[in-house]
Structure formats: structure tokens, C-alpha cells
Image (cartoon, rainbow, N blue to C red; front, side):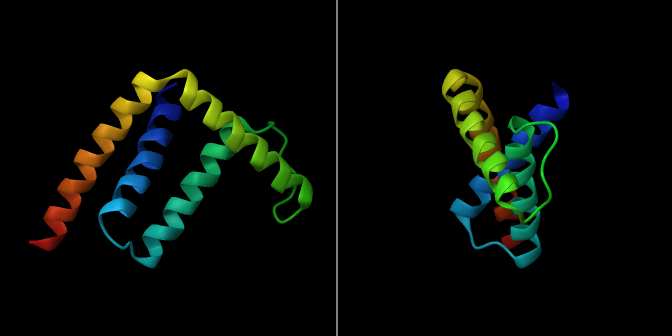
Length: 97
């Protein structure tokens, strides 16, 4: 469960950072990998090869599963989003100094 919560913390940090400032190319790539990891968490265990229609469908199902999970856990999502926004604001403020 800790691994899942760490993954979600990164997911929400990516979202919060993108709301506050433009992200560098490497940050965008890291966040895209995080988004894919979240979708894969909710997708079937045996993912098809990358770039295939089957993989696309699996990742879409994973995303839908993630959305359903968020709906079922609104208090935790609110908490994680608030922590991520506070962290992103701190990172943004630190980067500006």
C-alpha cells in the first residue's frame, strides 16, 4: 500500500506543479511516466506490448479504474492533493529564489 500511496503522491505533485508553472522537458517526461504507472496499477497484470491497440485499451481501462478509485476515496484524494499543492508551492518558491 505504501508503494501505491507514494505513486499517487507523485501523480498529484505532477498535477500541482503543472498548475503553478511550466515544467521542464525532463519533468514532463517523468510525470508522463508517473501517469502511465498509475494507469498500469489499475490495468491488468499482463500488459500488452507498448504501442499496441491492446495496450492502449488496457491503459484506458486502468485510467477508468483510477478515476473510480478517486471517486471512492474523496477524503484521501483531497488530502493527497493538498499535500502535493503545498509541496509544489514550496518547490516553486525555492526555485524562484
